Image 1: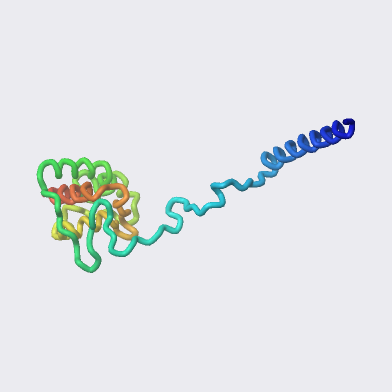
Image 2: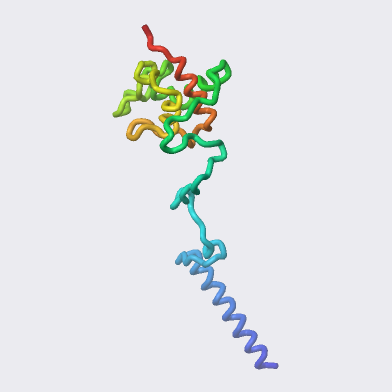
Length: 169
């Protein structure tokens, strides 16, 4: 019985010592304890994104088919679309392109590559699909792509609004 008590005391001391040592290593030395979540495969956002499967169509529908040219505008340029486009323009585009779309927004002076004047014939002569692709994909070194900020419908509404912009006389 005495041996059992001594053995129990030794195990108790070893248990307390192990607990203290474990806490010390966790809080002071910062040893990473292996957890189940760490040993399974996982990806951080945008870490090696997977390629789009062949012949797949996005949830919002096909934007354009490669090598088939610019898409056709499926949204009628009615009052609702133009009003939505105006609102989206004021939120997302006005700071660079200006309220009238002339490339003179509040931050345009601080941008090295000046924003495009959307009222000029150069812009207005482009097809709706070309404007849509420019909004979606951006312009390298000049304009960020808006495909993650705006839905497909939002981008078509922006195209319909841009069509209403006219150069001041």
